[in-house]
Picture 1 (cartoon, rainbow, N blue to C red):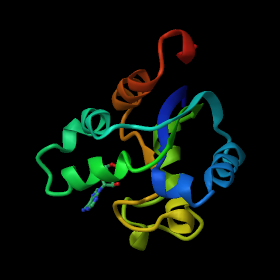
Picture 2 (cartoon, rainbow, N blue to C red):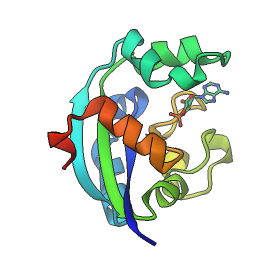
Picture 3 (cartoon, helix red, strand yellow):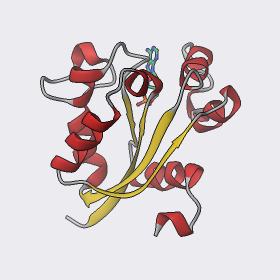
Picture 4 (tube, helix red, strand yellow):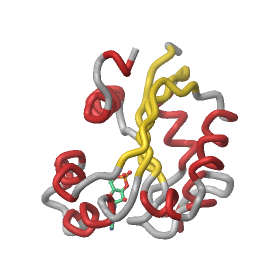
Length: 139
Ligand code: CMP
């Protein structure tokens, strides 16, 4: 399996709960290399652009409000089979359905405030990484 990249955000709930370090530690211990990382604070508008694919979903407005409610940490990660392995590490979107030991099971508050984002394909990982990081920062 080729080395590839994925993109994650540590979301406002996990950041506010002081879990950024613990989550990054779990990610590193699982074999992911940090390529780029940025602490930032989305506006509702930038959150809306990032999650535009969900704009027709009933939870979209609340999601944009929540994602702009506090700081987030955006990170590009590298590993063999990065996208699939990272989704296994974080667990199901709804923490109630996440496997024991996954990041969402341990740290998430709810289906919306679910601690971390993880890209769902190589294509979206590249799009999402370039949403936050310049070409130079992604080397
Ligand atoms: P994420 O993996 O970042 O992708 C879209 C986000 O929308 C998801 O995590 C959750 O934060 C949120 N989300 C997905 N489904 C629901 C839902 N049914 N109700 C509320 N929020 C949701």
